[in-house]
Image (cartoon, rainbow, N blue to C red; front, side):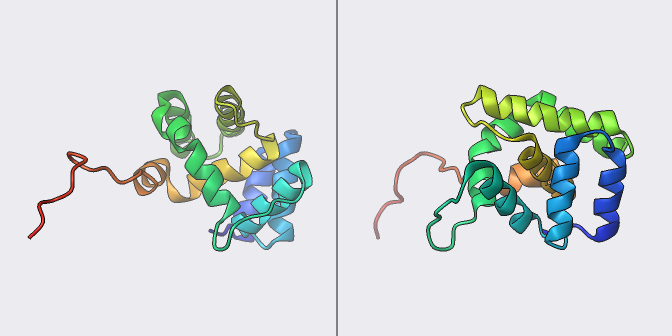
Length: 149
């Protein structure tokens, strides 16, 4: 997932006094808008080097762990939807970021606000409903195996 330079600049202008947001924009600019790379770079800066298994994305794993909190919280989803209705609102954007930090912390996942900024921008880019539906774990109807033939 990538942001183009005009999107990064627009976000920077929305958060002129929000240091974590500006820090996230610096990392996004450094990595040409690549959200995955900016996320990993910020994570490494805030939490130290992370050793990941082959083919595993730190951003994907983080989103998977946050999914229930993000998708199950009507307050957070409501904030994202309100921002999408009014995309020039700095208070709505920073409110969503602060809400994500609070939700994550309340669920034992301490999250730096700059890292949360990248996550919120990712969710805004693809849409909260698509994020929640696309990342929803598969369900089984009865939990039993079909009869053998």
